Image (cartoon, rainbow, N blue to C red; front, side, top):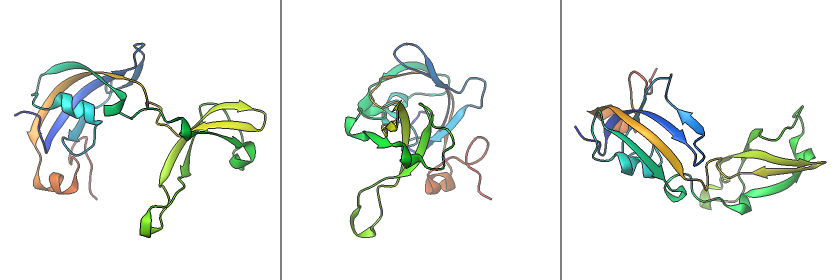
Length: 170
């Protein structure tokens, strides 16, 4: 069977940046099962895996536009240290979940949850960056396809893999 819409694909992968630093890998952990064509992987990696089969190995570079997008400098802000009340120690590299601003139509909801990373500290001025940590960089994947199987009706209905390594319903 080939990788295509609604196939359950199990992969082993290593993700590196352009300097060759390993950013993420399934090595030493369980292989990653996902439901193809349902937005569970970045679009560029799904495109590269399309039509491949079990046993195939590929090395692919995904541009930012097909991964986590370009960096948006408007998402970098300087805030006062008082914004972090109740945080005992603030350090560069720490990540926080924040409620996004803005309105989204009649639902009256805000912009949802956003993750910000502290990138710089100068006195009471803290620089935070809400860009995804991998935004703006090409991603280098080495992938081995372990298994490709048809998804069950339940998996397609729920939009994710069930069973070993997948999602479990209680």
